[in-house]
Amino acid sequence: MAVEWQSHSQPMMPGKEAPASDCDPIADVELTPLIDRAAQQHQVDTKLLRGVIERESAFRPCATSPKGAQGLMQLMPATIEQFKVDDAFDPEQNIEAGATFLKQLLDKYKGDLKLALAAYNAGAANVDKTGGIPDIKETQDYVEGIMKKIR
Image (cartoon, helix red, strand yellow):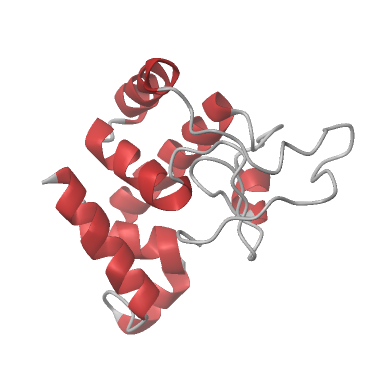
């Protein structure tokens, strides 16, 4: 969920401490090289990664959603598992997995950025079922908001 964040009261993974309930946004000097590296490695636009991070977590690495999404790019537990992320609250691991996932979605939808963003937000199954951006206000606002940022 891109709008609401909350801290979790219990660690999400064995041996990991829960992040502080309210963390500051990550400094741009730290964030930019992580975005640049992941963007280059996965051939994803840096503006796209930055736009997703801003929309998903407002640059807060400790962000969690009521639906269980975690970290800067709000990775869902299945995505965390799929990409073997050890610590979803580690900015480098989170951005790396998020960029990998976005690239997969861009490939799946043949470079259609709007469909890839819709799938990132609402799930590929919803995009596939409707054959386009699902009729979900949150998803429509999500796609439109990021598209405005990256133009």
